[in-house]
Image (tube, rainbow, N blue to C red; front, side, top):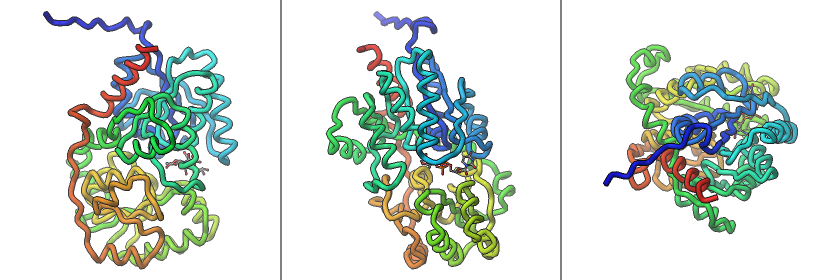
Length: 373
Ligand code: UD1
């Protein structure tokens, strides 16, 4: 006999609140939103950490993420101020929201603030992309992810290394091997991003004949001597180069009087941050990417494009072990050496865990956790 599973009427479904606020979080929310929207009363709260269209609106529009139900409008500021404002405003929201669970994503100030506010209201916290560690405690993201993991009841870890990191810290309950939601999104979007001859025309670049560059981490973008080294690296690149400049980096390059020197570099095109699909297209066709972004490191790995990471360490150690990612920090010598060796990583195709998509695994795990309460 076939079992008939009856869905609960919408108003009786548990209420799950997703708190997002920065670019990488919109990307992680995109594949999850349809799944969560079917299973739960899913409420999307935007902290307002990112507010420029290039860093926020474009992702909602292009990836068809439902508009945020609430925007806390916190904007930019020092860590304490930004984090504090999110805690205060999100706590106020939670006071009347009757949330059954709060879902936080990645490692930004929004993630930490959401986890703290929910935990103090005794609302269960679930963390997408748990267990990542750079082991560099001075990095704001490392602080955010460590605290968030210790406040979470459900920890969706993308890799086995992440699971081992959690266990080493004594976290052994609520661990769920979900795989990587970013890979799921990339896979779903790839044909759209690749198929567009118009994109090739738009950027005027030849396949495999340009470098893609981004840099935005505080440890790089906030220090004039680091930015100077970055400029040295750009000067040695021997193919046309596209630099997608984050507002934080542009602000600091101008502040430290480096903007004019940057603009004087031959064969360098400076553009604002691009949409998800345009970035994916640019990444999929580049000769190599030079970046300090965690997301781009992984996306390059999935796409089989060589990645030179302008940091001394990475959370995505698998990409380094696989010979796809090279930690060059800001050493011109290392960059020169790696590029001369012409690395050719292979494309990764499988992102499912036992045939299931990360979004399905996360949706089911939340449902069974809430059922068991
Ligand atoms: C944040 C995250 C980082 C993530 C990145 C993705 C933290 C600690 N950092 O860094 O982990 O990789 O997002 O982009 O949460 N700004 C604008 N417009 C905006 C947003 C920011 O101009 O819409 C400028 C402001 O000058 C601001 C600066 O960028 O002061 C930094 O923004 P912030 O949100 O604090 O950190 P990100 O560098 O974007």
